[in-house]
Length: 225
Image (tube, rainbow, N blue to C red; front, side, top):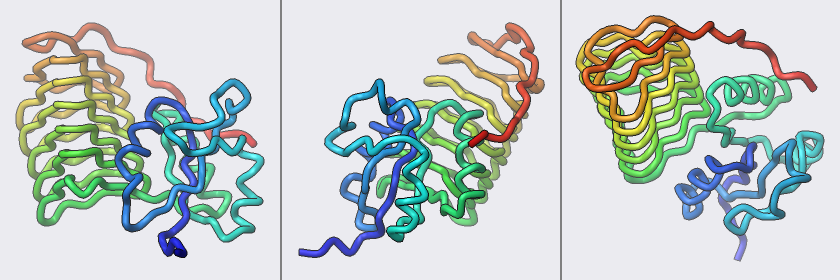
């Protein structure tokens, strides 16, 4: 029987790829062709039964075969952004993936390349940027604005009308109170309760959340090759 689903290549074969595969393996929309990772030489031949095909040098050949859809399975926010932008310059469509149990409220929107794990929730009128990750049981309150390449770990909760900057990382079980602004490249530690705005590059831990330090904002560069 012919599989009529759209062929999809996963870029990145590390731990996050396992989350993506287990979420979409039974997808009615996409058929996983295999995985691409520049570190393939030191990796197993397969990830959860799907072949690691090689590095980026194989992508032109895959495109010649009519495969244009990719999803970037890289947990590091900065690297995920670099790879996603590079893939677009090569003519690939970086698609979003959602588990059937994800709930996205009325008026919510999200950018290309985002990933919604099981039982994640994007509240009404939320706007999320490109390449965001919502892990299991992450709950984003209504009217929250989310930048590009943000990651929400399992079990986080935000109140309504928060503002989460580009490349922010929200750790396991963290709680962000309504209306709080989280700066670009900020890190919220596991189980932290954020009651005050966090500056760009800020690292907040604890309950109540306290500012541990402010990191230098990394330069967002293009991927070579």
